[in-house]
Image 1 (spheres, rainbow, N blue to C red):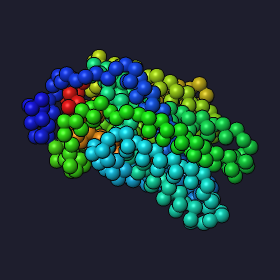
Image 2 (tube, rainbow, N blue to C red):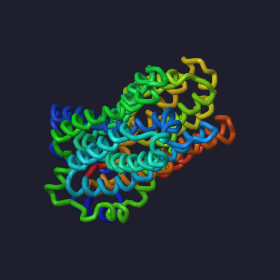
Image 3 (cartoon, one colour):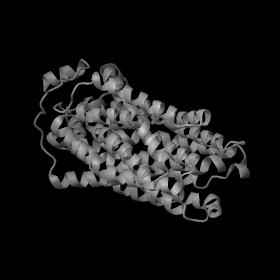
Image 4 (cartoon, rainbow, N blue to C red):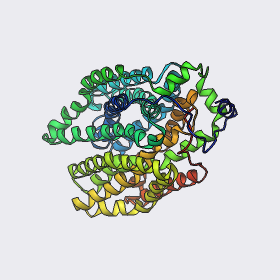
Length: 447
């Protein structure tokens, strides 16, 4: 243990250090942690993902000045989407500090409270026709609050599970944390799918508000669930041993700069590709005349399947390693970039849904299912929340936040999907190169 602390203090971590023996969390407690964490994550990410769907379908027309080209209003809505991502690193720093100093559980209650309140208020916003520029200004402000909350959510949600899981099954159990992320998107897409069945006038006047207003109930349920969670086992051990960083953010930057850069590079293909598949694809479908319900159905089906495939990818990472599984997803993204848009361009529902399955359940699933364990194993316990939050959220600004905005701008300029396919390939290459410089972490200790 002394040698491990010495190595950690030097800012390095051995690639194949065996796990130190610790008292295991019993199966019943672990199941409770997993279920509660997944439920809390799903409820919070439901709130966050509502914006991406509404930005593609509603906000550009109702809350922003759109001019003569409907893509201009959508571009403005996605700019607000990007602003929310720009706020995520601030949330990562804030809640990373709280989570590393005072516990993962308390940080997660705060993130859900902020997210729930901001999302509910979006459902009450006036339109551009009613309030002029106040409408987009207030929307962007609330999106910033959503971004701050989501910036602190992911790392804590992952660590509640991975820091209590048995080492030999950490990849599998950690992948469950992503079920909440995927489940949140499926839930948000499903609610929008249902309200879109209203007559168009009713949907555009009040129906779109329903998914946002439901957040008041989600907030109450989520806070109750999270307040009943125990603290993560690894954090509790570190706290008992007095292993706490005074300023976790500064400590992780000083000790683990390379690991932060690794995490950022790993995030580019996963996050950027995901938002092109999930958000921009709706814009592209609308642009070429594919009914919105067919596109939303493809999103829902593929994300539902991904809820299962990401667990399989996580389990596979326990067997063959994190790095090769992640590489499959990144290379796969490069391979399917052009076929994804070709399949949508056929306007045949089954082929459109195949495109979403390849992009989400296969390529994105391999990366997102492996990401929690891989990123967590890069950092030591006393700075892990902050390290994961920094790497994960800084990259999200450039990848997830800008990708649908840039993709829509490319579509508006070229009136074709091939530049967006090249963008997907470029993001895949960034992650492939990052993986080449990342060591295998499957046997690393979390201490």
